[in-house]
Amino acid sequence: MARDLALGVVPLWHSITAFINRLRRGNRLQREFYALDHDEAERLLRECAMGRSDFLASLRNPLCAEDLLLPAMRSAGLDPEAHKARHPAWHRDIERTCTACENRRRCRRDVLNNRFAARHRSYCPNRDSFAEIAQTSEDS
Image 1 (cartoon, one colour):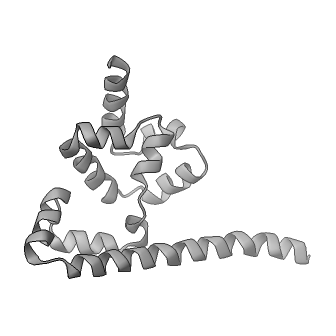
Image 2 (cartoon, rainbow, N blue to C red):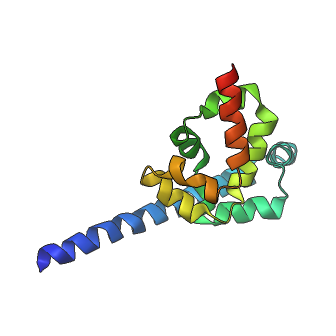
């Protein structure tokens, strides 16, 4: 009985602490954004192709504050660092799409359970970009 209870509580505890850590990360990023001077903040918003209110809203959302793009790309067999270096504008567009995605909960679950590569084509708004990146990588 106690073992069964512990088996149920431990995963819940891990989920709660992960959620709190994502909230803290979002709060830290928001403080860092507010500490930027006006020109630097505007440059960042242009790079993200987001308005100030959308950007700040994404930081307040604990699921948006978590970076899912890098582990998702890696699990799909892609090299996010190489792609960002070769195609910075395209990569920013992919980042923005990922941050605004309505399927972040499902994505996070699939990334954590090593199922993203097999399942992302049914819901990921970056699936066409990922396919193109994979094709481009194969052609190189």
